[in-house]
Length: 138
Image (cartoon, rainbow, N blue to C red; front, side, top):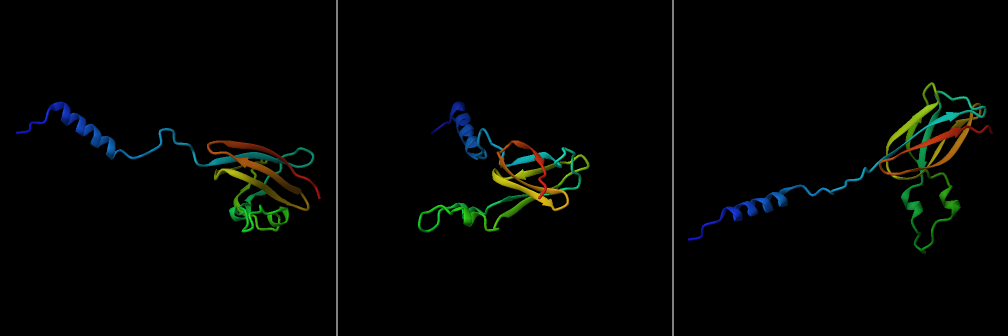
């Protein structure tokens, strides 16, 4: 008759517990990043209540076309940008955007009376990118 040893039982239980444990990476990386900053006018004064849009090109535009060529500037600048986040500055001209997918974006906003912004910004996972934006008069 087979009689299991105490060591055999412990090893069997340990293996079963290991197999039942959820499979999670040992060093899980954050999947999103953030942008924060301040908007100033041409004289350097903070601009309150200013709306910014964070935009990026659709992923399909950045992939190669059927002929194996990367799209040129004309196809990337034809107005097909997607707005992924918006923010309005506070009374001190400060803003923030959170829970952003990593990647390259363009921060845009403005009007004729205050000025315009078109600022390239990159988002990294687990990091907050800080930008200082100065509006440009048309």
